[in-house]
Image (tube, rainbow, N blue to C red):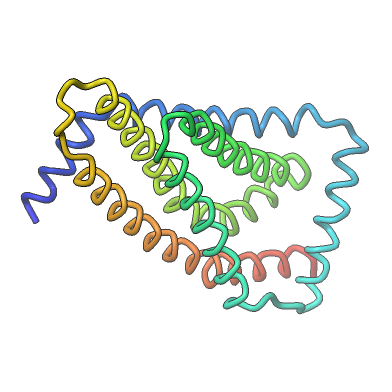
Length: 212
């Protein structure tokens, strides 16, 4: 366990610049998402809020969403997103698309929270805290780690391409790359569990308390 911790710490220290870059990129997406809410005109906000209120009304009228359906949908979404980042990391030309995907994820989080707070005030903040925050506490580090590892692997491939030492093993890095992404997939399943059983239930309780 001590050796594994040392390996992780050394890895983080060696590639701290990449992890910092990915974190800043994600935070930039969140900021742009919040700005996007404020840039919407009144009609656009009302149209979007109309669909949101319909959703809240159905929940307030005791219409429940099945947990296993949310679990399946959530995990499939995370799996597709992570697999796409994994595939893009296999080529250097795919690296900019990894940055875009991470930025978009931050944009969605920032927009979702920003819109709820903008339209519902403190109630929107409470709803965002129980419906968006729990799973994202886990999923945000997963996506940042996935993007960082994808970038690290792409740069290693680029280094091998221009290296004179042709005999340097690539499969060793590739096998580690696969194993790390399998771990991230496992953690994303835990995040999907949080979303389907914790966030969903807490959101239903809170919405019913606001609309009754």
